[in-house]
Length: 120
Image (cartoon, rainbow, N blue to C red; front, side, top):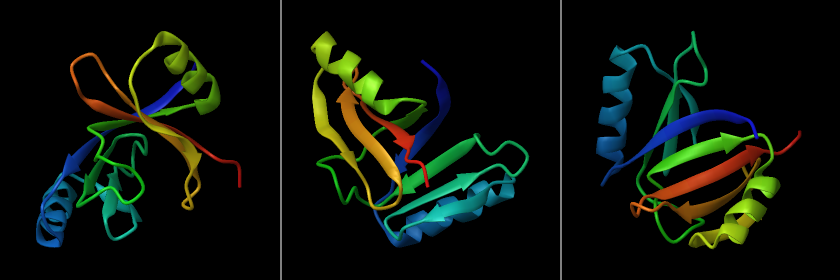
């Protein structure tokens, strides 16, 4: 299994806080690579897998995940997670912005968004 990137997800209360996070991390060299209104992802231009996301809500799932893990084959990981008996918080599905993902709860209670980008 190949892990491609890990992204911390920071839940904010308002669009104002979303903008403040954007501005602050911009001081550290991050640039916006995705903005869906309710979720913004910033990345390092020199190392595009170094990312941070800010979410005001989660529009397609019951909770905002604590972190995202991009894997090479999300279907294979999903099968292993289900077989392990871990708590699946949100079933595997395709999203309109080009990812296939599911949410699982880790032993410490954190929610992990596991995803793969779908081929274009």
